[in-house]
Every structure is written in C-alpha cells, then in structure tokens.
Image (cartoon, rainbow, N blue to C red; front, side, top):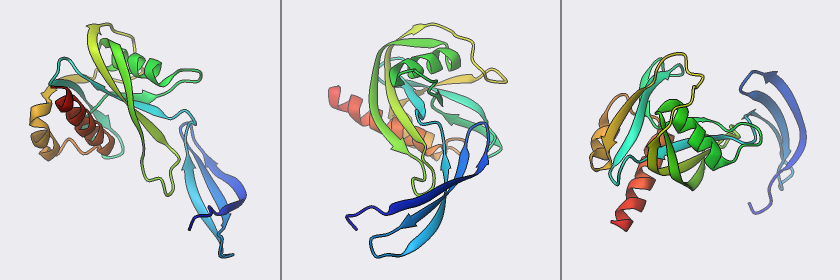
Length: 182
C-alpha cells in the first residue's frame, strides 16, 4: 500500500457556488480500476479560529447551521479569500463574527473532514491578545457571542448544540497547548 493509485481521469459532474462534484477514475497498484466521487472545495480552504479573551476564556459563536437545521455553538470560521493568508483570513473572520481582532495569531494545525471523499481543509488558528474591532460580515443575522471557560470544556461537549467536530478538536488542542504554558 505504499504506492498511491494513478488517477486515470477526472470529470466534473456537478458544480455549485461552494463545491464541485467530480468523478475520479483510479488504477491501484494491483491493477484494479475503480471510479470514486469526491467533493472539491476552494483550494485555499477555510479557517476556524479559537479566539481567547484571556488565558482560559474562549469566545464561541451561536449561529444557524443549515446542514443540521438548528443553532450550533462553535468557533468563528470562514472561507479564505483569494490571495489571503491563513492568519489574515482568521483575523478578518473574528472581526466580522465576534467584533475583535487579534495581535497574536498562531496557525495550529490543518485538519480535514471526511478525506475519503471531500478535499476541504480547515486551518485551525489560535487568536490571542484581542482588541475590539468590527468588520461587516456576510451573515444574514447577528451572531451571538458566547464566552466559555476552557475549564468547562467537558460540559460544553455534552451540550446538544455543540457537535461541530472541528470546533471540538480546536478547543482541545488549544486547551492542552495553553495548559502546558501555565
């Protein structure tokens, strides 16, 4: 399993504002040929930001999530615009969604979601040394900002409105990283 399969053909079978669905022909090292479907997103991906108000308080957002048809408690996030760096996108997103900018932004890790069929990458960014700064965003309604102590992370994960896996992963990464500094 050390040799990757050869892509024999790629065909776009659907295209939306956010995604492209492709049919991909693959030939594996054992000679077997298969056809897979995959979702392609923006090559730059997206950012998800862990904005820390202080050493233990994260600023979460509550916004409507159309995929699960309810309000979800998660981290600020958004698409990286063409030509924008990861940290610039992270700073813009928190200015739009929580009304703060950050003097210190640290790219923690890039994560995928369902990599078997989805090309999307989300870049987790730690935002510290926050200052008030608001930019107008593209949200259809005001986003509620919810301060939450990282000391209560288990309680947060038990809530029905907190299921976004990237947010949960980002919060645990930051909690563990900050605990090492305390």
